[in-house]
Image (cartoon, rainbow, N blue to C red; front, side, top):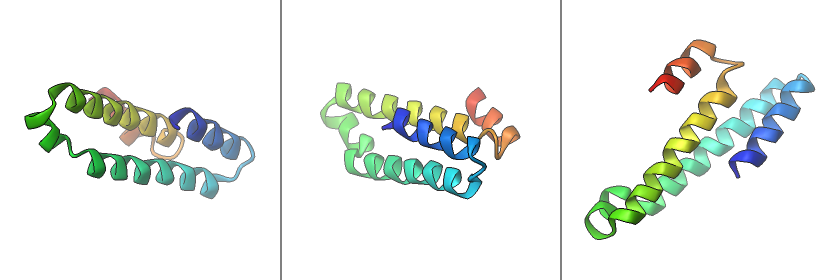
Length: 84
């Protein structure tokens, strides 16, 4: 999903459709939030540590991808996020 969203964002930016590009970024952020809420790593930690690790890893990778996609719009904030 991340790769598909990144491709869509890139296509929109190259076509100067910035609002559409930001819409795709926000769609990924919402999907990530749904994933986090559904997986509930704070509960997984007590029941299945490996699953918790996978959930956290997916979320971290998604945040990194979001930072990359947001860089053209919020370069300083994206850089701070990527450095974390």
